[in-house]
Length: 245
Length: 332
Image (cartoon, rainbow over the protein chains, first blue to last red):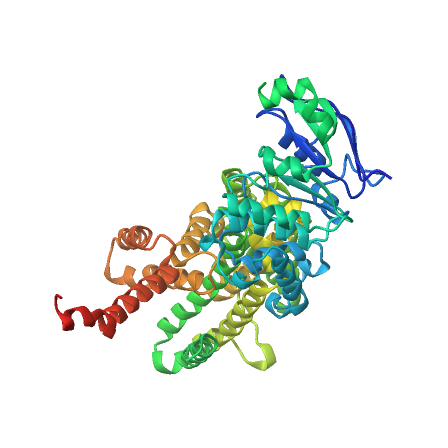
């Protein structure tokens, strides 16, 4: 069964067609890279897959289930997690509280107005475990406002991983990171077990190509090349629209 | 003393002061002012749920306050007992809050503010113009106060204690709410609604339930108001009332428990006490708000905490031996 299937997905903003009949099939456990120049429609595609934008036509299937009309929150409950190109965290809270909120999102406890959240030790323990996976458990109590950009990127990934997703959508996880931070995040992504399917948008080809098994190249909202790493890199259309040769 | 210890001690001192207030104040007029502060504090705390923790600024909450007040007053006028009138008034307040919520939560930000303003004005219009029901500008009288367990609340001190009990329950409920997972969810929707949806939260429903909770406590405050004044008129639902309670929340400090209480105290004291000495007390109130917004934009309570902390740190830096050492040693 395909982990994620996107079929003839179309989206327009007024007269601007942002995605045109996009087809995408991602197998379970696969590491898929989505590349394309700025404005190719990569983030829009992610927003359509997660339901943050409603598509004009086409369908999205998650492990064989049609989720096209499902609300974003319902998709999260079905095992879809994502990170954002522009970091979207809870700046007033600590790192630990950020990850706890991610865990709470899938728990029935989120409706409880009577108990003290801080006494929910199982949530806090799981949040610390998720932070340990990204190497941030030692600064768990630190307010987010006192963290570096690279640490925030890792908090985003920790929040996604804390939800034990079946499919993880990473929108430019290496953007704005230093060389050392990039290395850390790459190691972190490589350590994610194979039961998690990963689809990643990335501009940084050095790290992205190393990570990806299959690559999809978008240009003006269309898939123009798809294949293995070697196939896509060797394709003249890739060189033409993306690599600049 | 640890944070919990100092907080616990502060709560105990505050409780002792509040419980002994009629004894050391003595004058029934000032006891009544204290009752007013408490009932408006409950109202401000209710609005703070939306403004402070939900990031939803409402300018129509006086509508909910007045709906509960009118419902209670009309039930009492129709001959129902206090318990039935209060229960019915709270149900009506929650239903009205549900209607307000469904309509207003179609939007956030300025859109939410404008819809709540419009809804509040509709309530005011009904109270003013539907004279056959509300008695129009003449208002509705409430001739009796309840007498729970045989204790009559007609005296200033007994009414104060009844209001204090409701106030303590409201504060305790708000404190539990803020610390709860649902409270954390509501704050999350305030800070990153889109992210919350992607994390699996139903943002709309969280806001709607918060609106109901806020509406319920606004209704409780409305009932306290009619028992305090023994009268309700359309003025209670006017825009000025909504703006006043919003000012209580903002000036005291949003998203804090003490802030709305402090804000309610400022407004009630200015209206009832300072107005006796200063004819243009509105001007003084306005100046106070300007000063708060200028020097403590986060509100009086968090602003005071910040200034005290800064002062304490400056004092410690001046007193610490490290700061003295270079002067003692002198230049090398």
